[in-house]
Amino acid sequence: MRAMAEQQDEGLTFAQEGSSVRAVAEALDILFPKSEKDAILEAYNEWRPRVLAHFAPRWRTHGGANIAESELHAIVREITLYWMGFRVMHREPVQMSEAEWNDPQTRRIIRAAVERRFPRGSEDAIAVCAQLTGLSREAFARWAESDETFLGLK
Image 1: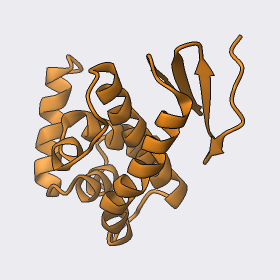
Image 2: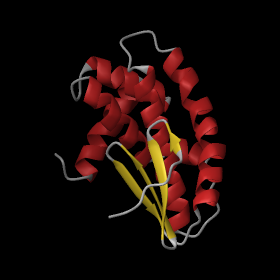
Image 3: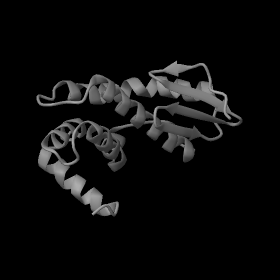
C-alpha cells in the first residue's frame, strides 16, 4: 500500500515512493523513477500552464459541439504527465514543444478523451479532435484511420 502525498492539484496526487514519485489522477497512474517529489511538482507546475496555453485557445474557438472545460483540463493533465514521464524515463530534461503537440501520442490522448464524450468516428468527435490537434477534419480523419491500422485496430 502506498502512502499518498497531501499535494493535490485538480484531483492529481503526487507521492514519493522510495526513490520514485507516483502521480495519480482518476485512471492515470504514472511512475517517475529515480525522482524527487518537489522536482516533479515543479516541472508539472511549470509545464501544465504552457500545455493549457497551447490547447485552450483552440478549445475556446471551436464553434460546434465541444467537450467540457473539465475534460479539456483532464486532457492537459494527461498530456503534461505523459511527456514528463517520457522525458524522465529517458533521463532527458523535461521540455515540450510543437513536436510533442503534433506527436501521435498527444493526438491519441486527445482522441481518447473526446471519444469518451462523443461516439468514435462521429462528426462531432472528428471536429473537436481536429480543432484541438490543429488539423483539418479531413486530415484528422485520415490520421485516425492510419493510426488505427498502425495500432492493429483495423
